[in-house]
Amino acid sequence: MDGRLTLRLTLSALTLLLTGCVAAGMPYIGYTGRHLSPTECRDLAALKSNAPPTLAQHQSELVALRKAGYNPSPWYDDPYYPDDLQAAQRLVDYWFQTEPTPATRLTVALGDQIG
Image (cartoon, rainbow, N blue to C red; front, side, top):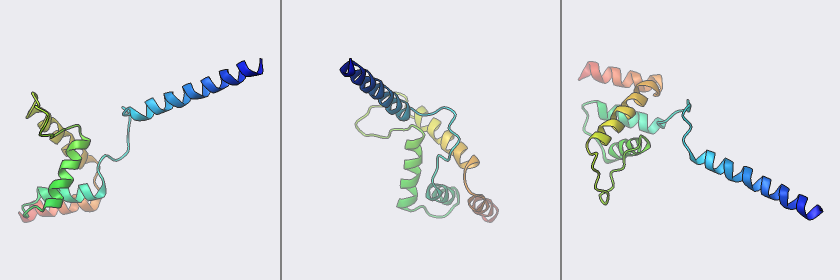
């Protein structure tokens, strides 16, 4: 009897553990945290200005696009290109408008006034 109880508790614990792993791997629809890191926000702000872009800024933009679901793999013949890229750009632009720090927004605003 004790063996059955131990087996049942072990299976229950494994089921809960696997359920938690599956749930953690799935994106949470109601996620309200930040999507862009402060570095990505800074680099996206610099790209929106008329200053010459750096390689690091382009890499930050690519990381943000990948977070938005775009896969630029050269081995993947994407039948939805450029629609998927444009959708990811719109999502990153939305995140940029809603998430950056006030200092980043000020930089963009001053860049728009200067340029």
